[in-house]
Each structure stands twice: as C-alpha cells, then as structure tokens.
Picture 1 (cartoon, helix red, strand yellow):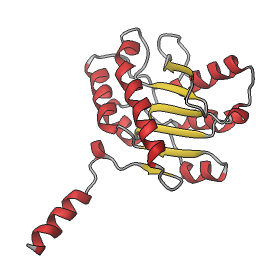
Picture 2 (spheres, helix red, strand yellow; picture 1 turned 135 degrees about the horizontal axis):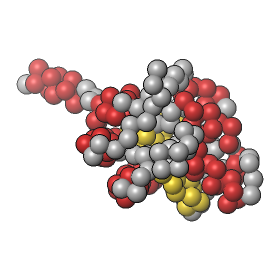
Picture 3 (cartoon, one colour; picture 1 turned 180 degrees about the vertical axis):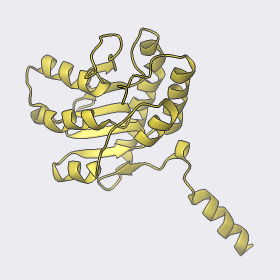
Length: 195
C-alpha cells in the first residue's frame, strides 16, 4: 500500500508542458492567479476572432488596480506590416495614449497576455512602468508549437523582481496551447526573419 501511494505521489508531482505549474517571482497569491486565469481564458477565447482578421496568435490586455479594463489588443505584425507590433507593445502604446502618459508606473497597471513575452516585449514592459505581468503559454512551448523565435531572455524573472515588477506565468497553458495549434493548422503566417 505504501509503495502504491509513493508511486501515485511521484506521478502527481510530474509536471507536463501542457499542465505547467504556476510560477512567479513572488510568493504565489491564489487570488491573483484566480483573477489572471479568468482574464487569460477570456483572451484565449477571443484569439480566433483576432487571427481570422489577420492578427497574430497573441492577445494582451491591461487592467488598472481596481480591475477595470484599460485596453485589449492583439498582435498586428502581419496585418499592419510592422515587426514591433506584438500584442504587449500594442497594448502598452494604446494604454499610454489613452492615459496621456509615457510613464505607466503611476497607474499600478497589470498586463495579461496569452503567452510569455518575447525578448523585445520584455524591454517594452520594463520601460513602460507596468507593475504586474501575467502570462499563459511559456516561450519554450510557443517555439515548439509555432516555430516563432522568442529571443534570448537570461534570468528575466529575477531581473524584473529587482525592478519591482511582479510576474506570474504558466496560467491556462493547455487552452493557450490549443489556440496556438489551431493557428498553425490554419496555415497562417509564422513571421520570423530569415537567418
């Protein structure tokens, strides 16, 4: 009996990529995870409406500290022919315009995105003043599923913590992976420069 329990415990402890464990650079706050899960599920459920209109398979939203939606937008690299138009960058740009400031730090905003931010987006987030980031599918899985290049991101979790930016990741991974698989199956553009 004891052996069965140990084997069952070991099997339950294994974390598969599509069932990734929530990660954070602070002690996990389950209320934050619950709210992030709700928002990221909503973004994932809307993804196909964006991709059917030419957007890339990533959606981001920015909320204020009271839970009010400031902006929601998708990746528009292909349909707006601009390599900088990732969902996170688009959301930051729209929030800055809507709030009339380039410094979002005064607003205590949270960014929710369907996948882990790439190297470029991490820089934009850091310089924007966003205080909290919640993401779905980790970069490694994004690369494995789609072939997108997420870039080099050494120890970014800890770097953000040093800068006072809270990060939660691997939220609603399975649903996000499903949406990425659908995007790939539909033969939409996987944009990356030739090397």
